[in-house]
Every structure is written in structure tokens, then in C-alpha cells.
Length: 174
Image 1 (cartoon, rainbow, N blue to C red):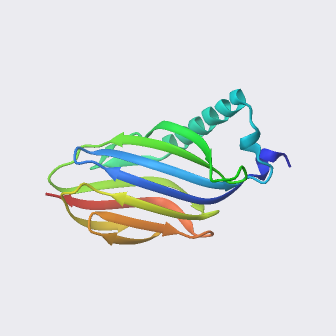
Image 2 (cartoon, rainbow, N blue to C red):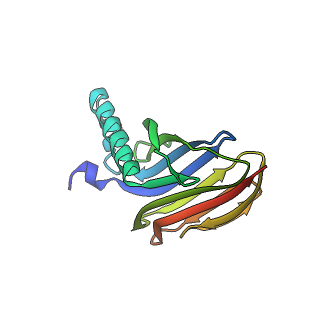
């Protein structure tokens, strides 16, 4: 097994910020355990090539999803990708920023996504922050656990859970 194959995912987190005009901004982060310090040992050109591969792999994954806002297809796009470290070379994390835009209306709005079902290899934590004038989050259909706090949804999952499939969020704007 080579060094790259020994990198183990340990946690994922994501933060969605949704603007009043329908812009979705996502910060997605995966944490890893890298016992051989593969990422930290890469020379600059190889490091940049690795980021390029990670960027393209994420974009390809996003293109396999179906995402809709109010019934209209939207197309998430990777805007940025980087590899950083949490204090030690054995603890890298990869971060992506992803954006897309839908058209919102006063009243009921719907976000829907369809992805392949999969089993979580690590715990995950997600926050969705809706616009300030979100009257109410009306419906959340997901396999993850979740709580609603005003205009925020906090979701989490544990290693071994089945996730994905059809998911949706309905919310009301005033």
C-alpha cells in the first residue's frame, strides 16, 4: 500500500450560507489522518497538481448530483480548493468552496438534491444558515440527524450511517 492509499478520512464538516437573492455558498472540509505525511512531503508542483486533482474530483462528484431550487436545476461549482494542516503534518484537511444560485420568491421555497446513497466512513457535521428574513424552515427530509434553530439547520451523522438519496429542505421567506 502506498502512502497516498494510507490516508484515512476522520471527519467532514460543511457550512452553507444562503443569501436573500438565492446564492448558496458552501464551505466543505474533510479532515484526514496521514501517517506517512504524504501531503506535507509533496514538492510545490506535485502539491499544486494534487489540489488540481482534488478540485476536479469534487467538481465531477457535484456534476453527478441533481440539485434543484424551486424545481429548477442548479449547478454547483467548485470555486476554490486547498490542503492545510491542523498543527501536525499527519493531520491534513482539504477545503473546498462551492457556489450555486437559484431564484427565490416570497413565501415557500424548496431546495432538493438527489445523490447516491452511501455509508459514512466518518462522523460529519453540517450547518445551513438561511437568510435573516426566513420566517420558518417548514420541512427537512434527510437521513442525517438534525435540529432547527430559527433560520439555521444543524445536521450531523455518525460513522456507519447510510446517507444520501433524495433530500429536501422547504423554507418560507417573508
